[in-house]
Each structure stands twice: as structure tokens, then as C-alpha cells.
Amino acid sequence: MTQPHSTRGAWLIVLASLITIAICVYDYYTPETGLIGSGGLIFVAGAAVLMLLASLAMAKVPNRPAWVQTFLVVSILLDIIGTAVCGYFLESPVIMSAQALALLGWIINVISNATERSVETDEVEDED
Image 1 (spheres, rainbow, N blue to C red):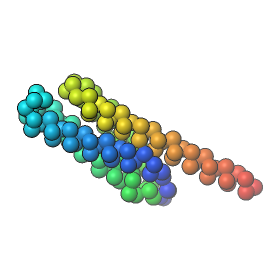
Image 2 (cartoon, rainbow, N blue to C red; image 1 turned 120 degrees about the horizontal axis):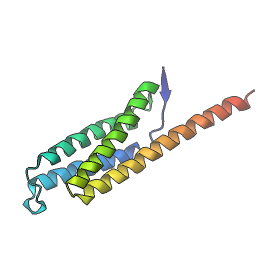
Image 3 (cartoon, rainbow, N blue to C red; image 1 turned 60 degrees about the vertical axis):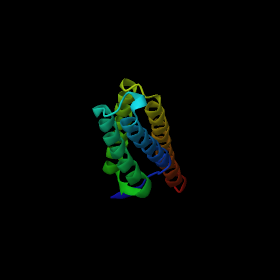
Image 4 (cartoon, helix red, strand yellow; image 1 turned 90 degrees about the vertical axis):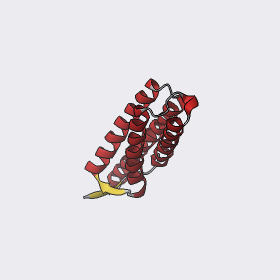
């Protein structure tokens, strides 16, 4: 059974993952960063691509089963945490800032989804 879920905040996560991918590509090919050819950047870029795909699924498909919503929310949160830690070890403040933006989008998405559910519950209770 599919339910409508909130897409608020998903676009912030999309933006944050695009920023992370762009910074990884820049750092990978720029000698001045000291990270040229680093395997850690490839790992972070791969995680950012997965975050991009998951957040696009959240943004573009509002009617999805509850188990898909739970999977997307949990996997994006784990991706944000892991990517932020990798950004810390790579000493890249831009990657960490992008993940802070992604976390803000995740929080907006979760809170707005819970708010919409409580409004639907209140409407059902008022009809009695």
C-alpha cells in the first residue's frame, strides 16, 4: 500500500550531494589540495552518488510504501554521517558543510512528514 510522503527537504539533500560530488572531482584532479588521486575521494564521491539517487527517489516519488520510506530515510542518514566523517578525515570543510546541509534537509523531511501525518490524524478524529 502506497502512501503520500513529504518531499520537503529532499531537494536540499540533492543539492548537498551534487556539491559533494563536485568537490570530490575538483579535489581529485587539483594538485594544490593534496588529495590528488586519493582513494578516499572516490569512496566519498560514490557515497554522494548513492545519496543523490536516494534523495531523487524521495523527491520525485511522493507515493511510496512505508517500508521504502523507512529504507530511504535510514540509508540517507547513514550516508550523511559516513560522508561527513570521511570529509573530516580528508580535511575538507566543504564536504563537511555540504553534509550539514544534507542533514538539515533530512531533518526538514522527517519533521514535515511527521507533521503531515499528525494533520491527517487530526482530520480523521474531527469527523467523528
